[in-house]
Image (tube, rainbow, N blue to C red; front, side, top):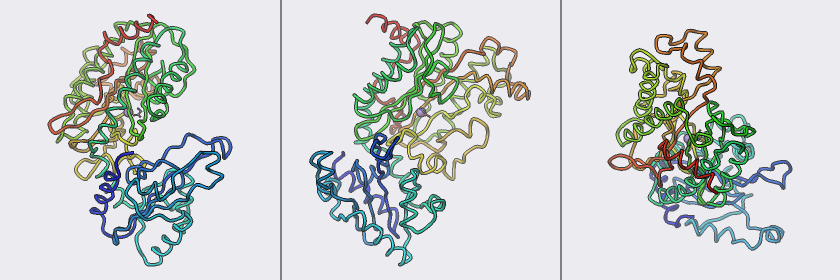
Length: 466
Ligand code: GLY
Ligand code: MN
């Protein structure tokens, strides 16, 4: 974990933003996979990690905004636990590592919360997303489980967003270190992009590299020759000549900071001319977006910059037509890129999305659009130094969507539906980097994973050498 001053400072900064009530931070507990003792890999809650740093089960943190008191609730390990888990520090010792002096048994949390409720004090908490914590909060607060989320504290959410959006130097260093693992995950997949290998084998190799490089994957791996399905978790295909392999995968650092990259490789090592044309447009969109990603600009503008690059490129290929600016303003390009350009990344791959993605990505100045495509943009607001975002433009040929729009005659003034026949089985291309906003611009974190099409071809071919 980071030094205890980091956690103490974070809690102090939070205290400077809220003056009344108490905040309750629920850590996560184990979840049974197929029976209680056979659990999913444990993942601590990100807000708890941010303020309390401790990466194990059964903890809750309290900050009293009026008295300034900070308390960690949890239980010491029993001799039974120690037989199965080995020697463990005391709760008090763990608390001291993150600058907390007061600890109580978990069972005492109820007394503190009941007393605060009886005094009419506000209990601030962020929206829970796991069943167990929804039930625990419902019992502590004496409300129905269905009422828990709606009683989450907007004040606490906004304060957490303000703090966590700006990455500290220690966080940037941690993220940057993990980029080496991301690099190996993606270049290994490129080398495996050969006829006869399966999506499952490549997924396994990528997950193994993540594990050996620090932690589990930061979200379920998307590894598919059907890249037009945006979150394709089916891994049953065997690679064929002419396929494009899309890998969208990330790794968690030892302290649970995420990476998230996408690369698209030609199976066998040579893009067809058609694939290369589309790839180059996506690469131009990625590079233009990277150049446009800087403090002071809204991320919505960066998204629209990428969208214009895509529309212009597709117009050159004859797939779109008409005025590019008008097409993008109308949302016609969303046939090819129905998702947003990117999102914040940090302790979560879609950072802080448990709070609500509109609260994280938008503000009074920049409101979320309802237009198809633009509505899917998770981050729209003005960028500030030390935000970390992903830029992930893509072009997809989604038969169901093309057929639907064609049947409706949708945007027939901007889209040449008669040119689609030879693209029906094309698939999709997405290219994603993780970017730090600096004082003057931005920079890609870590060594950039190979993205130039010639270099990608070379790396795929190099996979045949061993
Ligand atoms: N890389 C997965 C996503 O951003 O949704
Ligand atoms: Mn992403």
